[in-house]
Image (cartoon, rainbow, N blue to C red):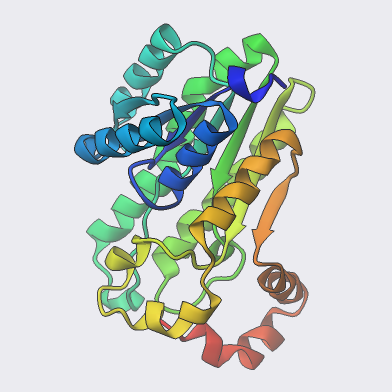
Length: 263
């Protein structure tokens, strides 16, 4: 891989939360962050702060990843203006927690449009260039919800299961091409994710002591660029739980029922 001062790292959903923290750290390492998000105003403010802190001025592009035509146009512009993309971090996504019988189909469809189809579209946009260069790394920000589904998150969990299935298939397809595929599966991260996911605030309050720090998750995610691995599961104790669940699902659903119903 190139040294950090020659790397271009594209991050979707970069106007806040984990995406913004990863952009900050890319700049601190000397890399060039390319920040994509729907909120152009927030992107500009974030990029200005990063430039002030690091001396590196990130590229910013307004993009709704659920708009396939806009995805193609944006990545074409990136390759024309910035150059080769070394790393794509598919971070854009959101959740909405509801009992399924009360869930709105519009919310479920939007989650799939952003969390799955948007991620797939961005991946497809960089693949031809990465294959030609025989180099590149695509990192999907998935979730522990993609390993263990819990009540009130059926739609969200389904999208993250889909992301992991896509990542696993793509990894095998690209073997020998020089392109790496990683999936990051964090538990709850302390960001504004929950302001939409659970408007009552109950879930965030119930799991507050387990929440991961965005700066820590961002740092561990970026370390995958230099030390690639198939999956990064955070925190470690939660990863142990998912492994046990895969072997003894019925036992885990019974034993951890109260924890699964924290939402």
